[in-house]
Image 1 (tube, rainbow, N blue to C red):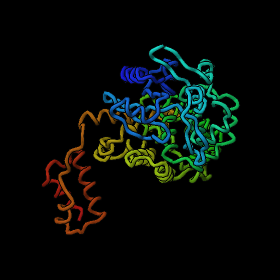
Image 2 (image 1 turned 180 degrees about the vertical axis):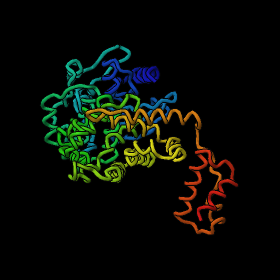
Image 3 (image 1 turned 90 degrees about the vertical axis):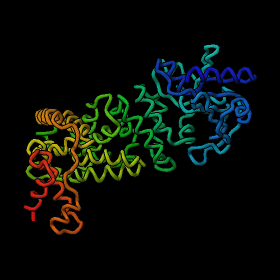
Image 4 (image 1 turned 30 degrees about the vertical axis):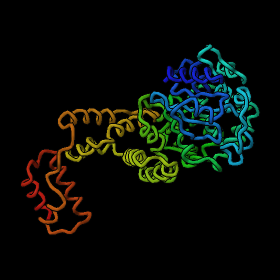
Amino acid sequence: MKVTSVEIIKKFKKAGFEAYWAGGCVRDMLLGIKPKDFDIVTNAKPEEIEKILSHTIPIGKQFGVILAIVDGHHFEIATFRSDSGYSDGRRPDAVIFTSAEEDAKRRDFTINGMFYDPLEDKVLDYVDGQKDLDARLIRFIGNPNERIMEDHLRVLRAIRFKNVLNFQYDPETYNALLKHSSLLIDKVSNERIRDELNKMIISPYAVNAFQDLEDTGVLKIILPELQTMKGVAQPYQYHQEGDVWNHAMQSLATLSEDASLTLRWATLLHDVGKPKTFSVKERIRFDHHDHASYEIANKLLTRLHFENKVIDEVCWLVQHHMMLLSLLTMPEGRRMHWFLHPYFKDLLKLFESDARGTTPQDLEIVDQVRELYQESIKKMSKLPRPLLHGEDIMELLGLKPGKRIGEILEQAFEQQLEGKIKTKKQALEFVKKMK
């Protein structure tokens, strides 16, 4: 992709135009990070870009942005521009095609406002981006309040860049975030918010990012369910790490770098139902908080327009995060049913992060379940086909379709998993006794 992007720039220069790499790829290159893509800027107008490159898509032609497909790679190619007004808090009302310097000055952060000429090995920096890279600072270009009013999502982007890169805020940038955090509820789509949050939660500094969201007032705007965990006390004998929020952050911090997106969200949300179920009896209690957490997580993820598969997996993990102890005592067939569930590996990791996020830590039961899981999985790597189906039960017992059929099938299947039932005839005999 890098080689192809250089060839594109050569084509523009051969045609008499300026052309450079822009934005994130320049930032990452200067930080020693391998760029994921190579956006290109040029003084060629959109119509001229389309003439120079054969395969183009006018994804944002009115804003001077053309998508080019070259050698199977996708490149966003944009004409230098300045913007006029942002009445919707996201897109410019009008654009004026201009110079490289003017284009740089209308961008969001100094570290994203640099250009690079790969043919001359030269950085074009009109906004002191290199200085801020060296100082590890996140700073808006120009007036931070104006930059945020142009695109309200920049509040979240500032928090994301600061934490993904492990930088700090320029003071004026930080004060602007505090001032404008409430704008995120107005004109920013839930999909854009979701994408920023996903980039934060998969980074090694996810905990710092969520702490910043809370500190700046953004959390209560976009994730009010998480804000409620602040200040909710837990029983001291089991949770000396502090309130529910501290426990969630401590649990999130224990996840490995390769933890899946769904596991990260499940870890963050596993106790989100505790504030709703808080009570003081013989001690502080959160009875049935797993079910409450499941319901809240479902609504939160649905609101942010996550894919159904992600919602299903995260909510399943949250719903079952309290079943650790019962796995040691349930019948072997029932336990094997859980062990072979496609989400169980992440559930085991959630058990561990929950335990490691607690002070004092107690991993004894987690270790016992893990050992039992590893031993059991050696015996049976996948679920066998059930010996019976619903039609068999209805015919044998004269029952109509309903919940009872499923309950009987489940009990028969557990017997099959334990090895007590090996043939269909034995399964039918077992069911006959349930009349």
